[in-house]
Length: 303
Ligand SMILES: [Mg+2]
Image (cartoon, rainbow, N blue to C red):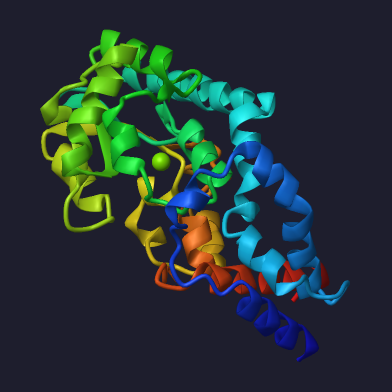
């Protein structure tokens, strides 16, 4: 109960009602963020009961709503291990594709379905800007997409070019919304991705569930592989499930990973995080912070 009281205390300290900071705060420089880190860390340790709570003024100034994203974002942006995982995923995808194409088949044209963000387009620069500016998604997202500045995820371009050269149709199934389609197509085309055209990119309309869009592709094509960074890129069975249910659903499909499903790393965001909050993004940053800290403590004690 003491830990819960501490969690409530930290929630009160960091009760940021609006996730987007005012104009002055959005101009916070990276240097400023670094200078504020001690205060932000003090806030975290206070939640564990390891030190006195920070002065109210420090909490108000630091507003650590994005502090928790720093290491994950740096890992995705700079860790060579991530590049290795991405190459590994697309090397495996190519191996599996070639195996499938070697089987005698007639009928529908073969196809692969890929997700966009953190699968073929690397948005870690955008995520880094969010964290450095202490802003929350989707601040600036639409504008960033329009700028078509995402880079290709290592290995993705060569794989999809190989697929296209092998007579395999490429479809991009993304939860970017329809108004973002133009910027997405321009970005994919500028990088040289195949099938960067209207009919081959299926954006989010009413639902985040990608199953209906996969089924639409399956009506005219034989889908060989699904490639993505989020379990929703593979099967609707994962949608809206809690953390334990997601793990169990993965276990039940263990044979599919590395076979029909090729998954890429993404520590920056995803349904894995949404599941922590019961998919309720109306929770305040402070409430989400409390949930994460509670989960962390539970992880440490095996609860
Ligand atoms: Mg993605």
